[in-house]
Structure formats: structure tokens, C-alpha cells
Image (cartoon, helix red, strand yellow):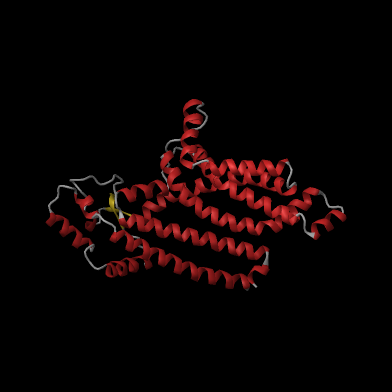
Length: 326
């Protein structure tokens, strides 16, 4: 029952977080300088045309009225329609524009659902790479503190955390793709195109996982129950993986939740560098075009993913160690 109560409490908190995020993004987009209607109708359109379209779109109503209207659609699962992307798939061009008030524009939900699987695929591959790097280094460093495995783990983490993701992405593309022709890196035509961006993201989050594992495993290996296991004749691998790593998994899970949320933010830069057609690239283009509904929809979906990740981490941690709910 405590898991169900925890889940319900976290879900209620998550709804509040998403609503506050929606209000903040909605308000900020409408108070920043610049008029998105001018981009829609074209820079040469007369002011009366701009105002006519703006009134038809409801963009001259008070912000509280606009937000109430948007929230009503959100409750029905309607994230609105893009200002710049028509249903045909091509982006609107200045001059001959597609009127957003005539139902010609693409649904924000459709645009997000089209790109989200690619971003989730990239994040999943990056997480696997990060664990493949972090687990051996972190566990070895924790088992032999002060010795060469610990030094190696610290050195690897220090190098990784010092590498800017945009620089590493450009270097990998030039070396691995242009010079060695091992892997593709620009665009997306299969899962192989996700490997280099995933490596960049994995390098970005690995230092924190390595350090957390090293500290946790080192502390747990000094606990009395570990010494009792040695006295009972348990093998080193069983002690580490069945006992030490299980107890170190709670702080690791909490850190993974934070790093996954951070990684989704880092995806913006990495996808833009590699021209990877995920949510990151879509977000950058939407910001450049001042596509309010698309920016809002991405922010809501992203905050929802953050909430779900944190809920999943809390539930798993409470399942492993019920004392956390006391």
C-alpha cells in the first residue's frame, strides 16, 4: 500500500509541476519582444493585415484569457496547432502564408509524436553507453580506493566532465565520419546514425555516475555485513554484485533520474550538431521561428517526462529500500 500512496502523492505533485511549467512558459513567450504574427504573414504585410490575423488567432486578448483558452484545450488533450508548419509538412514561407485560423497548420501533438521516438531512442542508447562506461570504472574504483582503479576512475571522470559536448560532437563527426568512414553522423537513416550522438551524451553524464558509484561502493565495502560475507566464504563477485551494488543502487537511481532529465536538455545541442531529427532539433527551430504552440507543447511534454522519470525513480528506490518512505 505504501507504494500506491507514494505513487499517488508523486502524481499529484507532478500535475502541479506541469501546470506551473505551462503557466511560466506561456507567460514568458507572450511578454518577450517580437510579434510572431509578423513572421506568419511576412515582413512586408501591412499593419492592418497583421492585426486582423492576430485578433483572429486571439493573440490580442489578455494573457489570462489566452491561458484559460489554452488550458481548456490542454485538458482535452489538444496542444494546439503550429504557427509555421502546415499539414503538408513544409514550413511556411514569408509572403504566401498558411493562415493558422483556417485549420491549415500541423497539430503540435502530431509533430511531437513524430519526433519523440527518435529522441527516446537516442537517450536510451546513450544511457546504455553511459552504464557500460560507468559501472566497470565505478565498481573497480570503489573496491580498491586509493589504488590505481580508483585513480583511473577519477582521471576518466575528470577528462569526460571537461569535454564540451558541442566540441566532442564536432570532433567525432570529423574523425569517425569524415576521415575514418566508420559511422554516419548527419541526419537519420537508421539506428547507426544515433551512435555518435549517443556517445557524446554518454560522455556528458558518465563522470557523475562514475563518482557516485565509486563513493557508494567504497563506503558499503567497509560495512560490517560485507565483512560477515567474507567470513562466511562468499566470493568477491557475489559480495560486490549481490550485496554492495544492491545497496549502492538507491543513490545511483536518484542520480540516474537527475542525469536523464539533464540529458534531455543536452539533447537540444547534440541533435542540432548532428542534424538529428528529434525533439531537440524541433525545439531549436521552433524557438527561432517563434512558434509559440510548438514551444509550449514541447515544454509540457518534456516536463511530463521529467515528472515520470522522477516518479519511476522514487518508486524503484522505495521498492529496494522501504525505509525511504518512513
